[in-house]
Image (cartoon, rainbow, N blue to C red; front, side, top):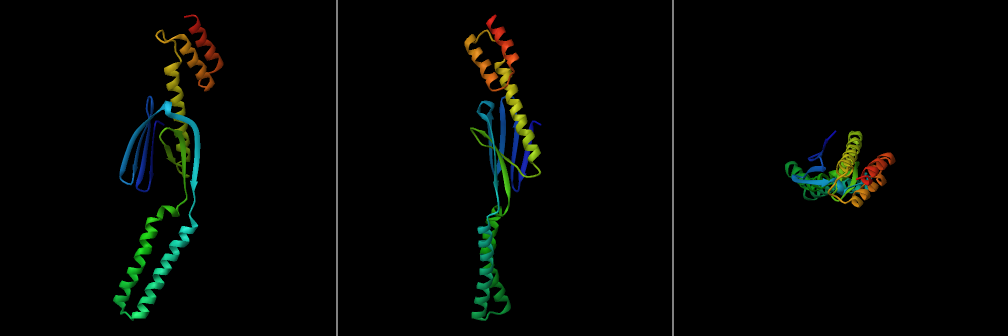
Length: 193
């Protein structure tokens, strides 16, 4: 899987694994961000963050709704408005509460996201439906990163000093991109050059 598309409400994200990095297109509230993160700038650390419902905000929203209802009852009772005028007062008192609830709509949801550490944020929606796809995509990123490093550094190059190439082979081995026998093989090739 070389691409991953995610949609969360009006927001969407598109990830594509390319030869030397990951291309990200993030549409957030009608703002489109496009950037590329090279494999050198992607690290191994993964974190999962979860956001649960904010019960204080829920209680505050319910309180605002009831306060709007009670305020409209008090105003209608005090001024003895007719039905059409009373309905207008009721709507005028409820609209601020409903607008506030609408703005806080995201705070009423349980959400999870998974981050792959990098110089720029690689943040994936991590809900129940997307967990397997996200985990598979992250493993594909890591595998593509390994393939990129092997293609770049696991070779004998006559133009690069031998010590630099040896250091690269040691680094590949330390990062567990190659096995000990692979490292010995290419080091023997470099030493016999």
